[in-house]
Image (cartoon, rainbow, N blue to C red; front, side, top):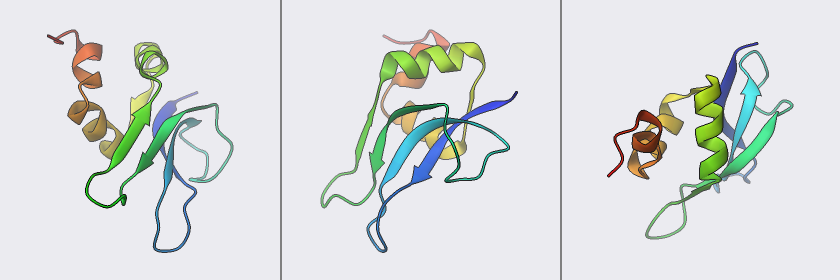
Length: 89
C-alpha cells in the first residue's frame, strides 16, 4: 500500500483550512485517513499557520510515506525536511 502525506480541505467557502493527513494514495481527497498529523491555515491575516506533530511526520517519512509537493515545501520551510534528510543544524 502506497502512503502519502497530503492536505485534506475542511474549511468553508472562501476560507480554506486544511488538515495534514496520512492516506492511502488511492483514497479521495476527503476520504478516510490513516492519521491526522496537523493543520494548515493559509489565510490568517498577516501570516500562515502550519502546525504538525513533527515526531509523527518524521516517523511516517522514515516508513516511506511520500509527501505531496505542497507538503514537502511546507516541511522545508519549517525545517522538518532537513531533519528527515539528516542535514539539520
